[in-house]
Length: 280
Image 1 (cartoon, rainbow, N blue to C red):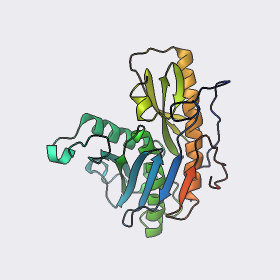
Image 2: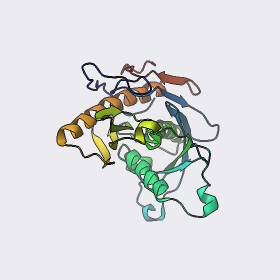
Image 3: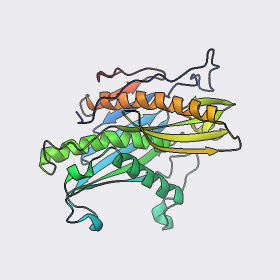
Image 4: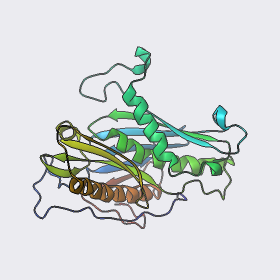
């Protein structure tokens, strides 16, 4: 189990009589979430995380070294890299390594991934060690960056445990200060909805990605109007939805860490996860 504190459950607000979305979900429902640890044999921590049809493989590698600017300071580093398989979307895209140039979107999400994870880590407790989390999108159906952050934290927790087992991290070190998870929200057909899939994301009047800690603190909020402005009341409604979604994801992360490697945690759409860590 991780040394992060247990998460709390927050129920997102719902419409009095919500009209189902195109896939049958209520406005405040996540897609089905699946988390499978131990997906790879060689990584210190690995997770296949699925938000509906979006699938992201997160692999955490433990390295007994730090970037040059941190050498001799007795502190560690956590960073992330994000990429998509060529066939992850409807139309094949060339590998960025073949083109010889990393896209701006890839760089942006990689930096977001690292920032989000470091918000939950006491890097001084790592010693002079680095944990790199590689997140590869196997299939994209909206919310790839939010799924990547959510799965990456679970892989990070397993990598920290592996570092303690190998003696590279002090056994009593509290590396993980909290959990970190992320979810998308947006305005679709004039109303706020949670966890947009691709059809919703491509037609949303506005969308946001929200990163939070297990304690409910905000790590990052990325919001953009895509042709529809919104007022403060709508912003509050979107953040309320995100808080509820992140609380469910935080509980799912803790529950997944309580399972054996290879076991899959499944959280059905609209289901709440008990905070005591018992699987859905």
